[in-house]
Length: 62
Image 1: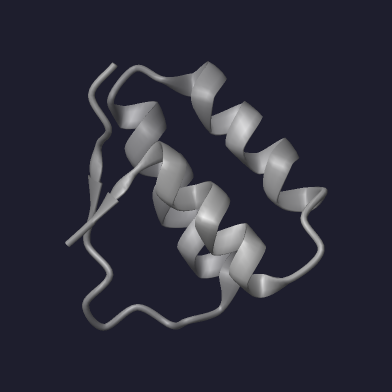
Image 2: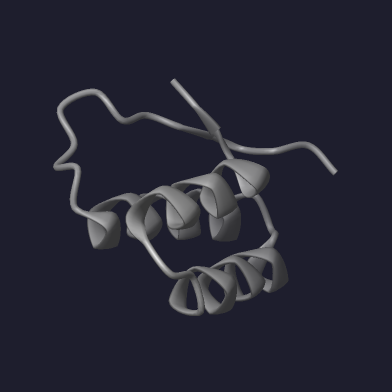
């Protein structure tokens, strides 16, 4: 499955801003299930770096 691209230029580095953009990109690409899985995994993560690593598994940054 192709990963959607998320534009991060000018985005707040807040993890909720980042995951929100990633989830919207996944849903726009017809990958709502992936967005839900990503969100669940990020919620279970222990820190910011781990959360970013999870998000990067689902989307590409630009």
